[in-house]
View 1: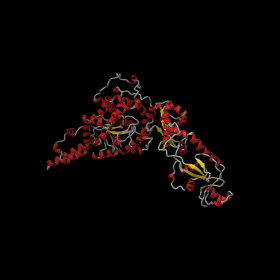
View 2 (view 1 turned 45 degrees about the vertical axis):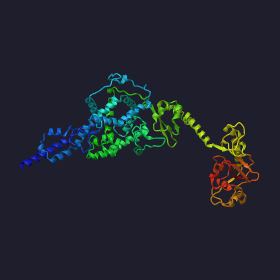
View 3 (view 1 turned 90 degrees about the vertical axis):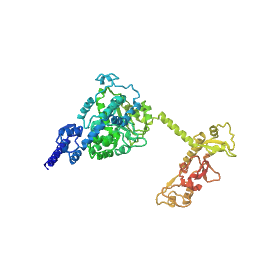
Length: 633
């Protein structure tokens, strides 16, 4: 009995000792996410960290405590496992993170690599004559072809140095090392381009992140996401520098239309990214988890936390995250390292030809195309597209109520402002070609084929289609006036030829001029024909006759002729007066509607034309048809 009590006491003592050491058994530095504990503190930039000892395995901890095996009963082992569950996950994750094969697979499958490879095709860098002055940057005096290789211990010490001044948990393992190798060695030429693009975007990123009181290191996130390619797109549909999906972008005010996609806008998307990252940090209070959630979504991170027993630590939940996200934070750490230690790896930026301070913004208040800007300012259209990637078709759909920002090199902004109105009105070569194409399309719409019938000649056909005989000969390559029944002739109705102009337009103007002497009255509520006739000193019969009314019924806002109509003696082909008729006759042309016809005669309405001609179906009009339009005086 005494021996049994002794064993129980020993087991309890062992459990207490283990729990004491378990409270400080973490694999690396990490942020304090719970109630403050009594431990050594390290405060950097306002972020508090717990400093803990490092134990690689349960065996190492057991050796340190010197606990005899007989003291560990089943219950005691269960207690130890629950206490050390978080550290077991960290140990397991660390083992996989340092596995060479797994690390290489993560790098090869990483979107960071795909984004980096996209820099090869970036047209803005096709002219490789923009190289920075290596003599000023090359403080280590590397030769051009030198590729420095450092042992893991050196890189680990450098990352530890960065970690001391960062709210992020920056650590080194084989996976991080493989990403560093990707940027510093395997894709070093592309990394030099990244360093150049950073000169364009990082100042803006830092300004916006600082305004939201966010860590400036978050600027490296855009490198992992898009390799700083402003019009980058993923197979899943994410767009822009910060790779926003459609719905997420919409939540943060990024609008998407057929002409404009705000996800491509460098400024708007950066503001949206800052707001999104701020919201994620309010949920997790851990920047590594924030990065994971930004990449895979909060749902996947929450699922990984649940599967790991509620542990809120990126490295602990690492095995349960999607494969792409398992390489996300290591890639972020690698980019952080590269941007701070590029000279040590003989990497220097390729100048993209323009810097952040060399870009200015003007507000556009009218529709404008990149072609107009390019031709008027003699500026390469590729440069305009690079600086303004949100306009998908090269058209800025601005108006006085909806202004858009246009980014231009600072040296041409003055010229744009001084000639803004001329630029809006300028017709580019492409614009002129577009107008010409529209004219051709309109002309093609008017093209018809007429099959000659027995008894017809060119004169009667020309009269029917309101064109001239010479037009018909020209359109059909006819040398004379001879045609045959069954022959097919190309005709263009409603042409602006001299024949049509001399017949239709003057006739319409003549009728309008004569109609100016007529007097009209718009019917008001409560009025009838008697009151109107009395006002204009005429009879109700006159009003009915002048307006072709079958009864005394009139309607508010109806337009009535209240004076004697002037006779029309026009001899126009399109409006002919029949000697035996009391009406002016109009010959319908291709595309005419009753509304078009009524507009040519003052006081004539569609309803009047329909009543005069007993028309019930307005679609029954056909070219050449003669209809009554107004009563002759």
